[in-house]
Length: 394
Ligand SMILES: *Cc1c(COP(=O)(O)O)cnc(C)c1O
Image (cartoon, rainbow, N blue to C red; front, side, top):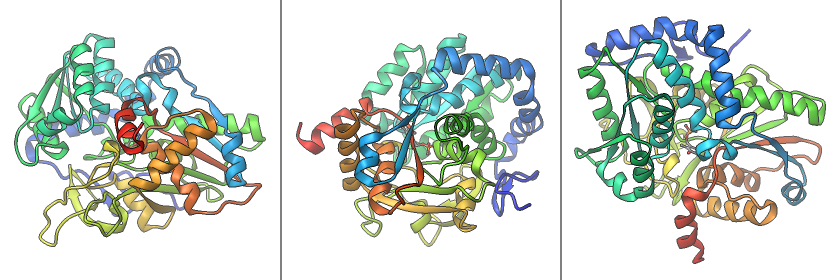
């Protein structure tokens, strides 16, 4: 059978692998050798499942959105990752990785963050486990995302400004990697999406796969079928989409729809629609699709939503795009903001602007009245209130 999962060399089709400096070989080799056996351990699964239930608040509801369904004349369910502790799906991954770090005997956690959401999710689990936490963040991002910097500090993390380059996410990632090279024995690096060298993309996808595992059970209960006709998720690096797609990757009756941020328009020069604008290259240790100039310089991405503002996609998504297993759409800032307002007024749910991109797909594409459409609502909009206020003059 043709599979869309990773192969034993760490590739999805031609994408993935581990393109890393030699000094990281031991760290990556240790992870590669141990991640599957640790994730499969009975004691790991018991602790992980218990924390997902009692700390994160899982299972998250699969909510039938009545008024939204009426508007689009199809059956729409929302997978409520916005109700997770800390307000988004990211904590599913950080809870899993901190348990893995403990089993690897690590004493210190590092992470990179752009908008600060992954930094907060990492600082949260470090507080929970009493582990020291160092979060690298571009100096410009620290100014733009001051409330998340304050959250991380309150949670006991040290936030280290990255002052080189454009002072944003990719510089923070470089600094985190440098830290890891200098502290290889004691430190685990928690990456926040399905990006980075193998085994990170697969490891993070597995830790997020609880999303589609729950959708299967919940749809069975509500619709007497495990598979929706369509599942829609936004893609920054691609972790919430990977989790929502995971158990459906090889089930052809389920149409997968990935939504990227078109920013001010695909051809505006201010966009993050990687599948439309990118080509093959290597970023953060894996071969994937990324936005780059002719001479291979990474293009600075743009989206109104900080979580989608990434110049690449994870290798799973590069493969889903090139193999045509998933449909890729792109949604502008304006379309996403309207979709966010629309959900708020029809269902009383203020979505994260990232998630609003997924919702805007409902305006772009027609669905049949009897079809079951699941939209992964990756996060809540509290963190975006200021952006909503400015945009709608509230
Ligand atoms: C970070 C974030 C995203 C984008 O990250 P993925 O790895 O693509 O899921 C999407 N939604 C929310 C709410 C986020 O915080």
